[in-house]
Image 1 (cartoon, rainbow, N blue to C red):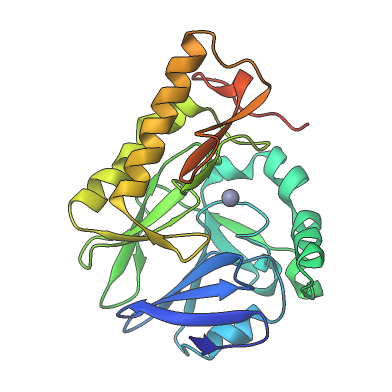
Image 2 (image 1 turned 90 degrees about the vertical axis):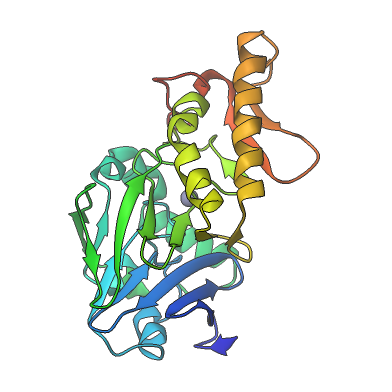
Length: 266
Ligand SMILES: [Zn+2]
């Protein structure tokens, strides 16, 4: 591990791809290409993230987010602008998960929230056609709505590398405000599984970051099980998780299981 500052440590998990852990809580990823570098996700806004990243690369920096949650865009104000899916510009993500939430996460974790993290910031829209060209390698994205409406995974097809944020985590959160429903998430989650079965390597937004086909296959199966139980009238609590005793597991809100629903602010 490379110590970048008191909150950020990095390891090169594959050639030119660094997992940066913030306080052993959330993972950011830095990809260094021949011309540019791509920073995917921005942590909670603790410390001087830009200075930490500059210890790994001096290339012009493209900044992007897998989704607009406070532990993934916390330091946005330090950078001035970043790329994200427009479906994550819904007011619920600003009101419930904006800088106040990032600051609170830092305080709970005993980290100093950088006031610059709260500076005004422009969100640039990612579409299916957006290509992040780093010179000798490039990333495209695919949307897997569920955890948020605009969650995207970042893919380097030439090197078979994926950064997936929280789109298909082993502790799959579909119960928080702004989450969609289990059924709609199940429509696109298999995209990631297909890539993993083709030999792609994927890193996600928490834990040690290492994502396996087995993990993703299990949470998809659990999601299908939740949908099945719901249709049989067997989901009686307002919130639930399946399974209850082990990881991986899927967290859900019982009135947001079927297509078209989403978890409101509560
Ligand atoms: Zn998230």
